[in-house]
Image (tube, rainbow, N blue to C red; front, side, top):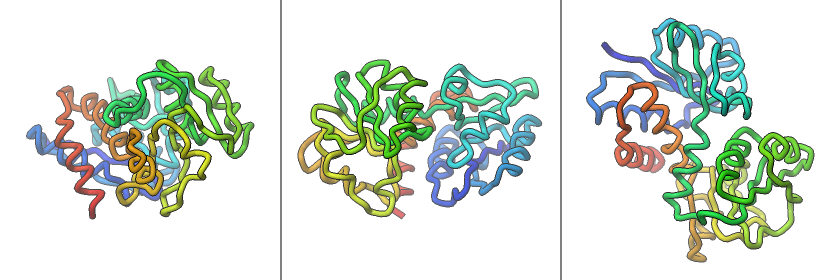
Length: 260
């Protein structure tokens, strides 16, 4: 039986997820189709029913629908309850389950990039990705959140139980996580954000970002958004299929798709 999966978002045509999961399914001998679906909120509700019914085995959810994905689910994990967002759907007994694997993606990229195993971390941004990174890294690091709107950073910090730092204050002695869109169009992070001990840049459009190039040239550790994408795909694949994910195959597919 051919299984159906999709990544849901808007816009979603740029997503590397179809390439990553299609390669993983092929490597495991699984007959399936993983597509990208550009949907609005009504389309999300339709897809939720399609997963409940078993027509779709599951779905990945990207911007701007991660909060909607959590709201539409019948059951959610503790992490989704805490963060208010979800990026993975599957069904059990006709009920729609939602989880977020973004934290696993952050940890995967962090370790692959050789980022500091402890110490101070500055997270730039106050959206869902920033909150997921804060929740994951607060387990092992002293985390502070910075956003252009301090109130937004305070909301994330209160939810996670971490600190706040002023946007624009130097990141000396801190590993930096860029969870903002800065870099997607080739922009450089501000100089004050490049003063840290390493960088996890969630931006992955078109390969290395300007900021990761600068940090790598200083021989400091760099973790990439592409590795984070694979890291969050691994537990989703294993949830859907109940087998170990072919991680190296998925990494190769992610890198190959980013080169085109």
